[in-house]
Image (cartoon, rainbow, N blue to C red):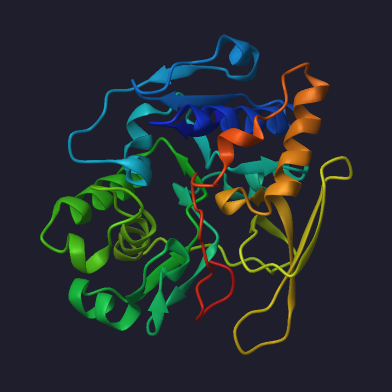
Length: 302
């Protein structure tokens, strides 16, 4: 059964540059391949040819832009078992193998929590009320998670998740479920995946903070991010609680923050493979991916 990582680089060539950094980190840590999805607005850089198993150009969808293109992953992944990873992530540890084994046999897997009341999805630059969504959609709960990493298998059960995401997105409750994102016509993806998973009663994995697949950088006070040691450790202050230490194998540098740390690690990976350094000027100001991200104030790390 084929297994691999999948990343999206749409609309802006800088996404391809940071997707290449993700690929470098994967190849340093795991033998599994990584493929990239492009649209017509991004020309593939041949210098990255050795980094990707497949370079797949897909047509633009007339009604979908930006992050919501994750709803199309099932139709375009080349793998039977797929680990989708946002371009602004880096893989630090070979312990990723633990999660490949842990998720095997699950049609769709994310890390998060169930929520029935209070604000949700505030980590996606917006906010919805869990109780209102549960009432509107007759849901037992809302699945709250960060969609920077999602695992799925090529099964009818996982296809049902993507179908439900599109059903909610294209249905009469689009504005009630989601909200406009960073660019005209773009919606945040997490509200649609979170409600779709809940509607199909596919619960999220809820690992301890110190044993996660994904650790995100917003709101961190300090961190140890050492790609040679394979160590990701981030200190965060959940609202109204004592500081917690989050650790895992993938670090999601939302909006590339902290940018100095991200560039230092990315350039180290690039130097090892003889690739040119990142052009810092191209990333000023930081506008890629989840710039401005903030954690869900009502919950642990989403």
